[in-house]
Length: 238
Image (cartoon, one colour):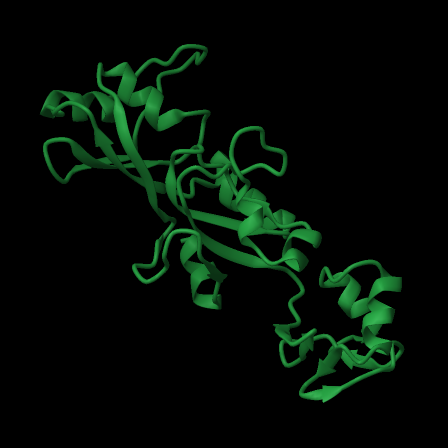
């Protein structure tokens, strides 16, 4: 049986402010639950995915945890405190930021593509930890033509500064003379750029296109986000 909780606490847990702020929203009739205005902060509801509510007209569904997919645009940073560029958290509704969603692995300011966010610590660890070997695939556009020897070098391992062991790609697929898809199982600092630099080339454009078996949706424009479905969650960890 689903757990019951009063509406004030539900809104608070979902990121709509302090409990006092949530109580005021409810009393001021700014909240509907399953299509009906509820002005009783102490009214109790079952915590399940059938609980739908609106706050100031914006529709929400109760979720124990948040699992999000974003198409990260260029010139955004994956941190809350930035100096020169806006943060990707400004692209999310405030309640999601307030409840503490975090990027699962950062992308550089000029790197675009698939990034996941969540407030579920276990999920974040499972996707980001090298121990779980969740592959990440990048489309890498280089300045100079890549030879077959260059690709083999990436597969056999390159030595990076400040790294004791050689770093290898899980897979490398040529798309054009200067474009490859590279699969990695870890996410070291500037790893793709450093690996390409180690073979005497330079990254001109970088996009992450897949995590696990989850591919960046073609219909998701840069700067947009959506919830991960149950099928997406399985694909990410496959």
